[in-house]
Amino acid sequence: MIRKLTGGLAALLLLQSAVADTTTAADMAALDQRTQSLKQAVLDLNRELFILEEELLYPANTQVSVFVSMDVGEYFELDSIELTLDGKDVTNYLYTEREVDALYRGGVQQLYLGNLKVGDHELIAVLTGEGPHERDYRRGATLNFDKSIGAKFVELRISDSEAKMQPEFIVREWE
Amino acid sequence: MHKRFQLLLAALTCLVMPGVGASPAKLVDGPAPDFALRSTAGRNLRLSEFRSEVVVLNFWSKWCGKCGPAMSSLERLHREYADADVNVIGVAVEGKPEKAAAAVAEYGLTYPMLLDATQQVSKQYDLSRLPATLVIDREGTVRSFYQGSDAGSQPQLAADVSALLAD
Image (cartoon, rainbow over all chains, first blue to last red; front, side, top):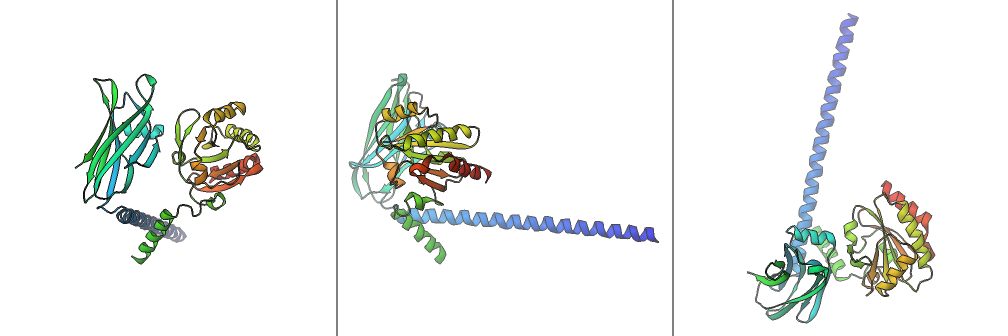
């Protein structure tokens, strides 16, 4: 009788422990799910704020963006880019090793985001760095463009000219 | 939606008034303003690339008498935490690169020394006295600020750094 009672008690304790474990695991899973959904909500809100901010500060009608990309880069190690728009310095960006490496690996950087009126404009980019034979290199690239209604995207591309064994800097508008 | 608008308004206010909260004492518990500067070794360094590590940022100038001893003290700190995620970074305010390089050699500094020749960064941090040292945590938040003779107080800085490493 005592043996039966002890066995029953042990079985009850085991059952209780199993139920408690299941409840805790279920609670934890629910909490984890709630945390994940809260995290997602924060990310969504942050994204919405970013878009709203961009729309307010840089309306599509006047927006101008300048992007930097690199193709190979064997003859040039980028150090800095100075950007002038209509004679006004708009940015002077120093590149770290990590940033240059990201560009080498195909990254595209938004160097400048601003507003421009409709009409003719001049963009000058002065690039400095280390050129062939480890020499200091400083070269300018100019783009004259017509800003119409709508956002304008400009790409500043650094590539190698195998024929000249020199770096090449191309500034072009994105259609 | 109303809350979102308020949040956006607050964010925009911060954007159009960059001077607000820029004083180093006011910077404590706030984000350390990001910057990129050229170092005496020729490399460019950006503060935000040290995120996830503790940074001890020291501003100094050749004309400041207390700056030399502070830098010697920071060099000891740099060596003490050489194997930890701690970066001591010096910023030479004004002056020519050669003078900063000479100071690096004179005090035997092995930590990176950046050149703020145009004082753009020291203005960003709104420094009124030199030397000035900021301790920045792994998240990029300024946790303490010292200036004058306190800027090189090794026991205090070591205590701050140890506390942040333990966080």
